[in-house]
Image (tube, rainbow, N blue to C red; front, side):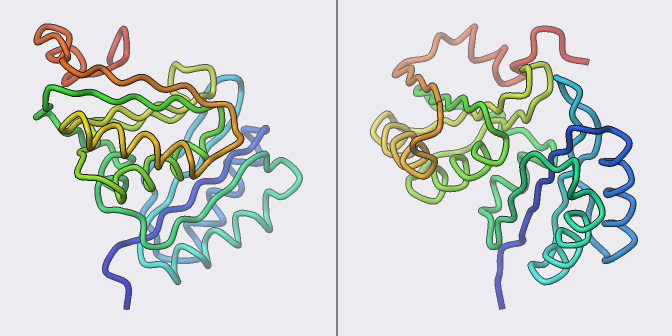
Length: 190
């Protein structure tokens, strides 16, 4: 039996259909709704988690109900515990000197890149943002020793090639900027 949970993300180009699909998903199986709601530009996301079989059942139901408005989808069985915690809204506040950033235009791809990155090297995820205030893009901030951050970024990007992605590695992050990043990467956090 798998030790790590699964997550699934469905992205809809209709708020009405996305909400209907989300309702069907939570009624189908006892999953944890990690997040559900709108992101720019006018899309509806449903992010669920739990045991693999239960998440798969709910995910399949969401696809069935909302297939005509579905624009992106992914299920990640055995997702790394740091990815699960980050998408559930938990933040890592202890940052090492080096900071790595992966920015991807597809939200499913962002989850794949973050999962591969943290599984490939000794790094910690500070934050994963999916679409919120990013025009539909995803961003992951991670920290660790410089060589580990580089290895994680390389592995994350390799997992999503040839998708459009940007990345940056800052070997010695300024202490004042680190305080802001540890709090939030949003310009106006709520």
